[in-house]
Every structure is written in structure tokens, then in C-alpha cells.
Amino acid sequence: NLSFLQVLDLSNDSFDGHILIDFSCLPLLENISIRKNNFEGFIPQTLSHCRGLKILLAGDNLFYGSIPKFRGSLLELKRLSICGSRLTGTIPI
Image (cartoon, rainbow, N blue to C red):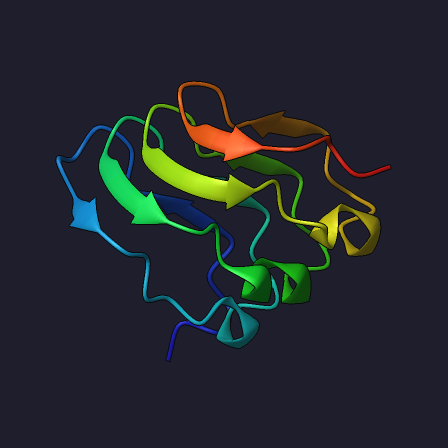
């Protein structure tokens, strides 16, 4: 049971593949760093359940597709890094 987890740092750990974490089970998460890995696929939409998320560092991975539209539900988000990925589109308001 990780429902009280506030920080998840998997950065620079040589992980690859798709992210299979259901972030809806981590509602208190404030800081996620998954940068500098080889994650691929879409950034999970379940991140929208992390209402208190302040930092999302997901750059330097192999993500593709549209930039997620969950930004409107992450009102506490202060820092977003998605550089070095293959995401397309505009950053949602």
C-alpha cells in the first residue's frame, strides 16, 4: 500500500518500456521524477488523479503522442519537464 507516497524518484535508472503505474492509487503524490530513462509510450492519464502534484520531471525518455491534457486538473503543478521526448502538440492551458 503506497497510497501515502509523496515522492517517487526513478530518474536515471535505465528503466525501459511502458509505465504501468496506476497513479490513481497515489493521490498524495507531490513529486515525480522519471527522467533520463527509456520509458516509452504515452504519459499516463491517471496522473490527473494526483491533485497535489507539484513537480513532474519526465524528460529524456522515449514518450510519444500528444502532450497530456491533464494540466487543468493539476492546479498545484509548478514544474513540468518533458524535454527530450517525442511528444507533439501544444501545452494545455
